[in-house]
Image (cartoon, rainbow, N blue to C red):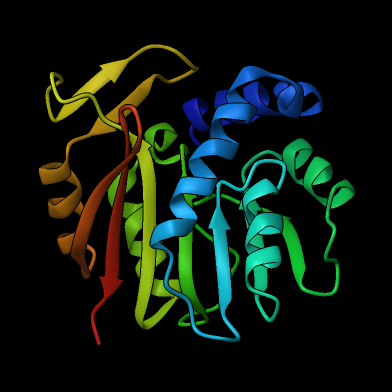
Length: 203
C-alpha cells in the first residue's frame, strides 16, 4: 500500500462514524437519486459499489431492484463497519474492505460496477479501470460519477484530502476507459458539476 493510500485510509476511517451526519452525505443521496434515472440492470443483477462508503447507494439499489445482489468494497475498514451496521438487506448485500487497485473479487462476475465520488481519490486510475474491466461481465456497465468543472484542465490537481484529488474531463475519462477495454456510452451532468460517465465492457 502506498503512503498516499494509507493516508487516505486513515482519513476515511476517522470520518466514518460521522460521515452520514454531514452535508456531503445529503448531497451524495441527491446524486444517487439522479443516477438511478440512467441505470440499466437485468432482472437479477449482481453489482459492485466500488468505494461504497457507508453503503447508502447499494441499499437504495436494493429497494429499486428487488432481485439485485450487491457487493460494496471500500478501502476504509471503518466505512465497511458502518455499512454492515446499516445493511437493510443482509441476504442480498455484503460489504468488504479492499483496495480498488487489487480487488479481492473474481473475474467476470458483475453486471454493473458503480463508483460515485471516489475515483478522484485513486493514485493509479488506469489500474483501477483495469480491475473494473476484470470483474465486469462482457457487456456489463460501469457507472463513473465524479466532479468535473468545465473550466479545469483535464488532470486538474486539488490538495483537499491526503494525496490530493484528481478530476477528469470527459475526454480524459474516455481515453482511460478505452485503454482498459471499456467503451464510452454517454456523459450526463447529474447535479452541478457532478458528471456521470457510462461505459460498457467489450463483448
